[in-house]
Length: 254
Image 1 (cartoon, rainbow, N blue to C red):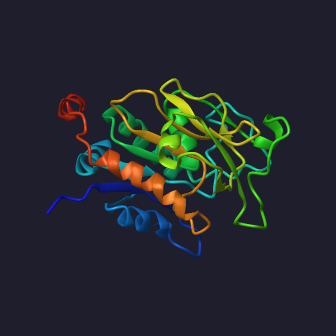
Image 2: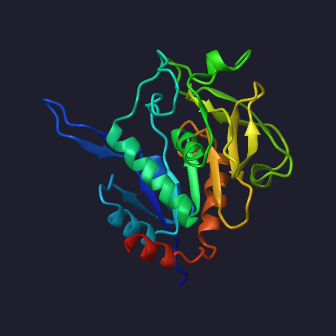
């Protein structure tokens, strides 16, 4: 019997309040879609120790860098705080940054979703818009504060991995964000945009690392059946041999 890929998934976090303890949680769509794609999901709490994080990454074959209803803190990004910004707890963002940076260094396959896509772009040297409505000329609607099933069209770049995943034809995806990728990191190329030019998917330019970033949410109940193809493409990459990184971890431990 073949061994299923083990997929690490970061989780959401809420600090304790006077009437409630701190807690971590995760949308079930993440682990359900990984399971449906033939993987074994393993949830990663926000480890404080880098050695614990390295040991965790030694166990997994890939990482899903999840999205969040809240935003990356715009201040450390050199952006002005926008009225629509609601920063995620610092414990989550700090851990997610360490997780993304280590996954990039070790060339572990990554599927980055939503704010996870934005974070990985920043970690790899890119920048973000603090708010689409003010940064993009004649923007489409990318978030509806009332309706949670907003969808829009994707314009897929011919010859891209997204093109391989979806093939020709119009693709519509869910949308729930106001921040977005501005300057793309040098290690990525555009896989899809919306008609207003906002980057909705990117992929690595090299063959030695699989990283696919999507601004939409294939794990969500508002996703389409076609979105499972994104999960399946990621799962296929996790079955391939991962470059040897034992020397990296030993060097860091020294």
